[in-house]
Image (cartoon, helix red, strand yellow):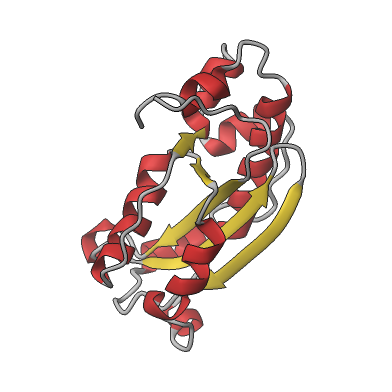
Length: 185
């Protein structure tokens, strides 16, 4: 097995907002914050037309309405740019299986293979920053004084997750990131 070190890698911190599970869980917004673990290198964000109705409860949570996404690109229109942005990086998200799974399904829908090494900031936080009552993004950020003025919007959550990742990267005394990168995940 090839050993992967967290140094000299580029990480793509990803967050998505969706239409909700009962409507196919389609992406309504996506944000990517590329980082070297210490500083932000690049940002990308866009609304996405999910091609399904966004329920009122989701609009209430995210602020993203059907009118807002009506003229937004559909996933297929941003797929090449998104793929290029993520290619060769480590896919990182808070509860990575959710974001990664939905994005992978969207790529599968348009016959683009998508398979990347990934890291979960929930799992990393439990290993690097133990002892917190909750590791939900809102609660761990509050406990660590990470300000997120745009909660439940893709870029707000991606930037907060990037700040959390930077904090963990800096304080990873037991090489938990290295361990996590070298697991089959």
